[in-house]
Length: 205
Image (cartoon, rainbow, N blue to C red; front, side, top):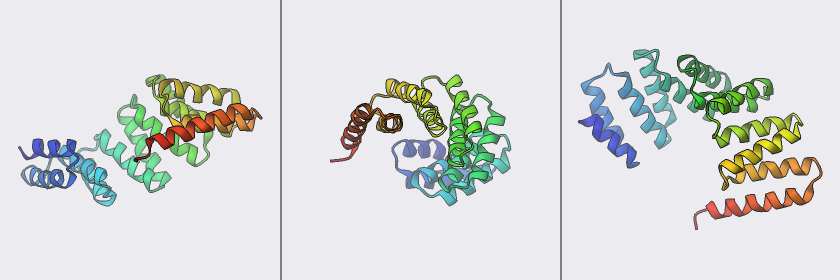
């Protein structure tokens, strides 16, 4: 009962109430990895990453095949810019579920941050293979192509992202950067204006 109510609170974004019910749920069944996993997601949503990490560690201790716990740990270490640990956890997540697009996307993004463009490209190609409508994958791969001066491919990826998500200001902003790099200033200006307008529209009034 506590576990179900905790989930209801979580969906309503009442994270503190959710955590209180997960605490009771864990007291009843302290050997359940999923209960630590769920409480960890509530701590994450609340922005309490240290406590979330402890819960994901405990979930893995209880269930070493908890793919989601590795994935969520990867997200926390990414947030902290601890690249080695983040890549390790995303890799473990992929090892447990080889078709998990989110883990490839997370790891690919980290490879971009550390300028390992070869591995970034492999991971982002995999995301697009698994999830061809993932706009973020096209944006990230477009960034790889931009940084490696493959401008034609970069424009194609940012254009694909825009087609999938027409209100994505990041895709327009990045495509503007490519157009600037190749001297197409009018197209660059049009894309930058669109990016600015979309960003402005998303800001709370």
